[in-house]
Image 1 (cartoon, rainbow, N blue to C red):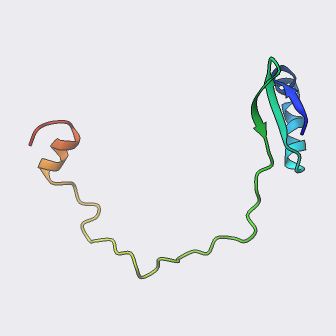
Image 2 (cartoon, one colour):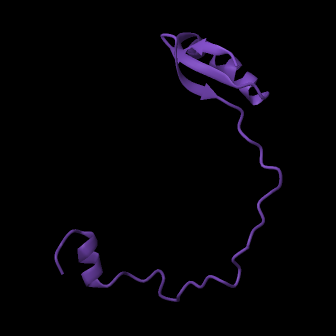
Length: 80
């Protein structure tokens, strides 16, 4: 795993990102002390399935209605 100085990483960021995207892990150091690791982003193997909670969640009819006055005052830090 290569160790790259922070100054060099700033000047070569685009190249380092391409290398990481290709599967390489790169350590970024400052004054010789490792600070961060640039790693490839894991690819999702299969798309997410939509609707696993279908039929299990209900949204009430008054969902968008304003909150009761006392509750609004509570959110504003006022005493009821």
